[in-house]
Image (cartoon, rainbow, N blue to C red; front, side, top):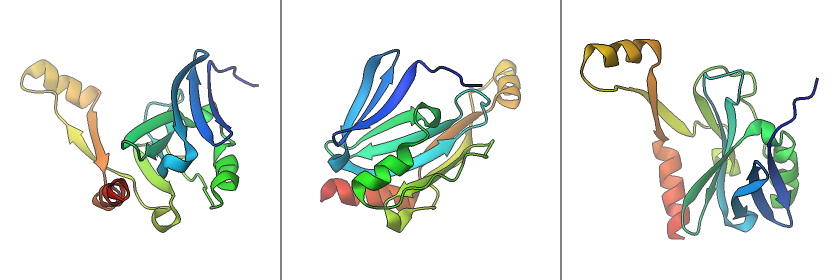
Length: 151
């Protein structure tokens, strides 16, 4: 059974475009890519698996659901001339990994920690029932992105 989506992730003429409800949400020149990653969360079975793209000018982060174009790693590999492979398809928890560049491929992209809503009984209950997760680039990824942005 095929589920129709109202979004699409396209790679055409050296430009990545994410369309949501047939309107362009963002676009990024492939030549401005400095990092491609994937991340998952525990919110499945809806969209819980995402691509993440980091662009250089200025440094921006773009994201799109993996299901908007499962073929993208193969297509992007051909465009940039380097392997890009996904590896978190079966993950059901918060997880991430770099897909490209090759020197970081397979390494964690984010570090995760619990975040608290604040004081009070109701917030403590919500923290137990629906915990908040804080994510940030790992030190290795942050240093890589900063070095690419400077260069």
